[in-house]
Image 1 (spheres, helix red, strand yellow):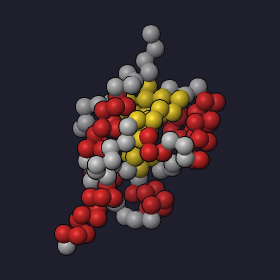
Image 2 (cartoon, rainbow, N blue to C red):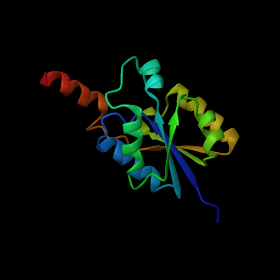
Image 3 (cartoon, rainbow, N blue to C red):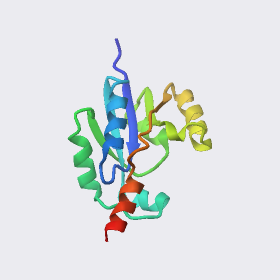
Image 4 (cartoon, rainbow, N blue to C red):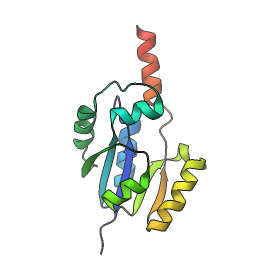
Length: 139
């Protein structure tokens, strides 16, 4: 039987329970999980803000998680590019993106490549934006 390779991608800044839940749930749905960690430059280009934890440290944290088999640096949000590198069968993303136009397009692109997008439960209680806001309030 062929191993099912899964892929997920994120910034993983200020690693928290939402990140852990995503990785744990993704790994439960595949045999081998690759996690792409967005480069500092990529994050700044699409979020318009600097990361708090540098890329090398974020990669080391994600790599230490027992659910992750391999970590790669990512410099693009283009999932076709990730598929070309990893050749995954399943692409995991939080269900807060379900129905989003960009992700509908990604679903079609993945289908053409023989992969599927699987939406996993989003942890609403904790997110990096919330942590960043609390840090500002503490100042």
